[in-house]
Image 1 (cartoon, rainbow, N blue to C red):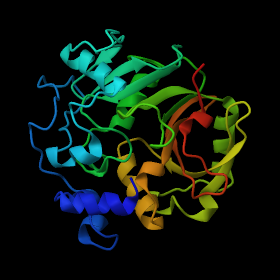
Image 2 (image 1 turned 180 degrees about the vertical axis):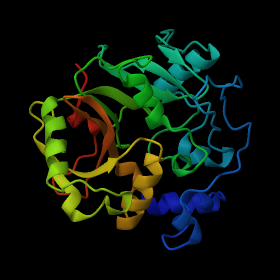
Image 3 (image 1 turned 90 degrees about the horizontal axis):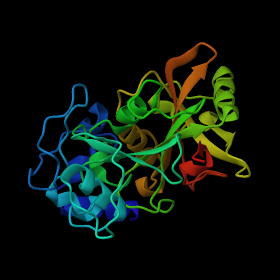
Image 4 (image 1 turned 120 degrees about the horizontal axis):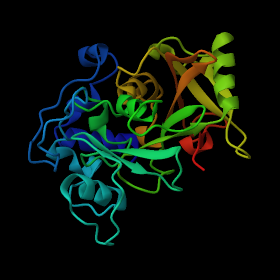
Amino acid sequence: MPRRHFVALSGALGAGALLAGAEGSASAATGPVSVPVDPSCCPCPADPPPPGAGQSPCPPAQLQPLCGRPTDNDPLWQDVQYCTRGIVPPSGLKPNCLKTTSNYVVLHGKPETQHNYLLVPSCRITGIECPFLVTSGVANYWHEAWENARSGGDVPVQYPNIGLGINSVSARQLNQLHIHMAGVRESTQRRLQDLEASGRVAPQPSQWGDPQYQAAVTGTQGSGDRTYRVLRLNGLTQNLFALLDRYVVRRFGLDMAGQTLIVVPKVTSAGFTGVFYVLNSDASLHDGTVTCDRLLVYS
């Protein structure tokens, strides 16, 4: 959905507050705002979350035209409903629910390897374009993905370097939000550290879109160089969707639906450093890409 239609429909539905207003407004200056939630909007489990998971509401009912309806028949959403509610998909094929919480489930990706998993919200959220993702009420799915994928996590990605990613609307095949938890090549890790050493990685979210922090990164075999906006974060405590929306999408008048987002934990010979590289790209960049699949290793 083009951004102008997204904004118009949001306003018509009374969801304008979800976009935090114009760039110069008070809400934009203080970050995303909370959203009143209709508890009947979607089938989030009522059980309390495990310690540290942090319970989150689902998108309110008025956002269903933008974020999906609980009655939708997307195959990945049907898998979630089997894991959370025991509803067998119409195909009769039951997914292997590797982990189920109040906020998300973890499933195998395709192909099934020990470094290809998906973290999928328990709420009905179609994907990156859902405006509920930029609000303060949403769960921190990126943090949860890392906590599962890291060494010692419940579903660890068994690969020397780990990458997390989400595709744009045009690049994905399934319309239920899912964060890929996979591997990245050692050369990708080295490239990002070299960029940081040469001052080519944005040190603050407000600088994320600046031209000097746009760089080519070579992807998986045969995919060539693609241009990404590269940001450095000390931890994943912030809402990455909100940062992307505020400092890239709204700053340059882009469409959230056209964005891809990749997170690569910084790892040195001493191990994980506590730092994350956050990469974003889209079709507006020279040699940009709308998919995280060029950097992640699944098979």
